[in-house]
Length: 222
Image 1: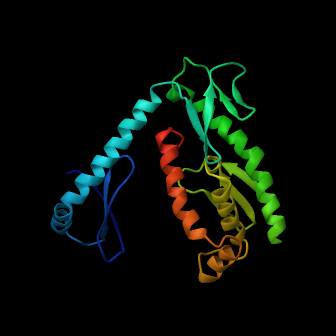
Image 2: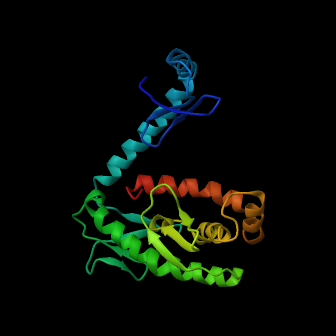
Image 3: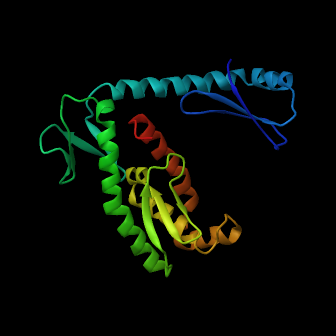
């Protein structure tokens, strides 16, 4: 089986299968290829299960991308798509041309989602910051693929527009997480205590965001 090796100063071997089905081995810097090969062979049953699941997800994604969407994820719900004009997100529904596949619509949808995110997430962040007594320099919406949000040393909160697919509880968790970084620029126990004071179930929220990532992948919005 083909796999990618990522070496670092770590002491142990770790094996992952990403959502595209790529097998990645994380290994110590000087560990021999023979040892790595033996490790991968020992995990053959696990690999077969997880690469098969990844192949299934990729197949479902390709099928979905090839046809016009019937619904799209937004704010924790699946919003119906109506095939009429004017096009856009209007009165709680998406309006899209019925002849365009989801893949053809993706460039437009990304811009549309970014606009909805700006209208929703910026004001929500400022509201929560006021409630927490946190002073911020500003809020920006970006297209980050691997991070829901970040906070700069200048107290600017950055949020990915992809967060708009999550429900309000998860959105608030990400916002609180970044606002707490204005006080603790790390993930120390003190930082998590600050998060927990506002979002007691932050661990559950953190886990639930993995489901949102999966949903975005399925609809080509990752």
